[in-house]
Image (tube, rainbow, N blue to C red; front, side, top):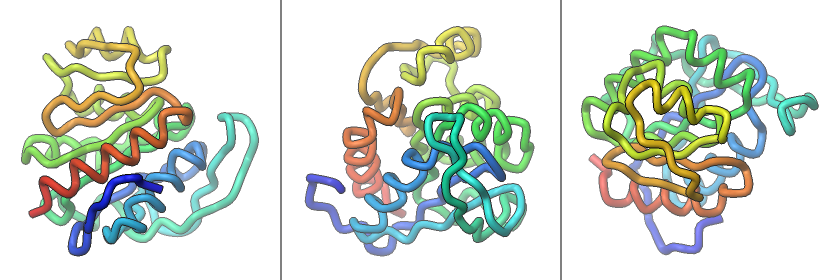
Length: 187
């Protein structure tokens, strides 16, 4: 829950969810924080239906409904996009051309994108991080640097439209920053 006073009524956020392997807490906490702040959050994925999350990358957890597919939506339909982590989920999303293209268009439009843990893999795949300062799960450092990004081991980093965090431990700061950025850039 955010500690800042923000009214995100009218703000639309697309929250990515892989068919399997998204880290549950990195999906639910941003969703709940944004919704509690008044945003409308739509869950986006490769296909509609149930998607199964994980805890600590290894234990199956709950399933959540994917409301719309990447091919059914456009970047200009959202004020922000959020990419949770989870090694398998993030790896799956970065191979989905619809997810990559939606993200690329959104960043080119200068709208906020939040990515946590392994979520920045999708930013790497979309080729939108050259010259940007980011953080992520430590194992992504080389990928980010090879894509031209400037990796740092910080709780949360905002560089232009891109908001990144390292791990579930950073979720309070990540969610608060998402809300702040959404409140200043709503269309």
